[in-house]
Image 1 (cartoon, helix red, strand yellow):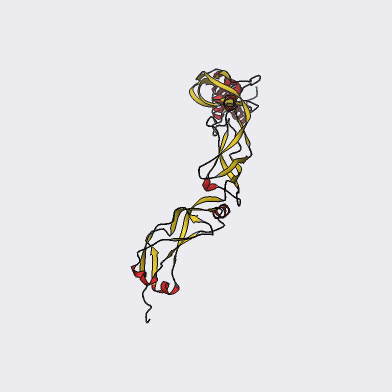
Image 2 (cartoon, helix red, strand yellow; image 1 turned 120 degrees about the vertical axis):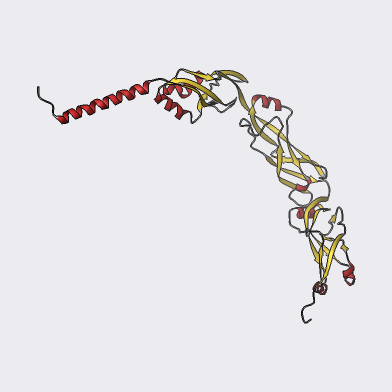
Length: 337
């Protein structure tokens, strides 16, 4: 027999070593290991999106035996929720179902990576399936005291649609309305007696949880058209700027300022012709107040003055302003004067 050369012996040793390592790795990969209390997220859905499912998510604990390769795949799988799709064929009313979670998880993805023997805590979960239904609800306008309206205000749209689980819709039938609250201080646009409030917020019945993923109510405000009962209206101006009105020669000798820290009158109620009040409300007419000293010859003895509101014709204050304390200071004479 021919004697083997040294390099052939080395090659043989390398091949044997590689094969041994591969055999060891294979054996290691196939050894089953125990894993206990591993957390998994489960989402429960249905294909049509026409049903409410509660609960639609759950966190479960899984114990299982698997190879190291399967354990790695499990860890990768655990990073996102597993999806279980419920068959809703022939479900026409509220239905309860019990899900056996080991079977659910195997079908949802664990079976695909070869994990088929597992223990789940809890073992089962009860879910409720309800058809989603849509209903039209009438909009009813409610107006607060102080807004004299002739006839019935007209909302636009007059009806709004709501989609919700069947039992909630059943509770809304033949009795529920959606309220639009018309507030006097927001009494809208328009001139004369005709008024439009473009964005009146809607209040839905309390049975509807608008935060729920199973409730859809796309319309949240409406336009309201209405007519005032008479030619007068009221409005509260939040802040009215206050100015000092003195003759020029008096201004050169004195400074006059209110002792109040704010140069405004606050919450001034006005009443007058509806079209003029509407223009004030919409910011088309500015309202101001002035401090006028009737007898400037006694300016140094004056300690209080009643502000005078400068108002459009026909508009008056619901409650005239009261006297306001003032500070009067003589200006220093110019040097060399």
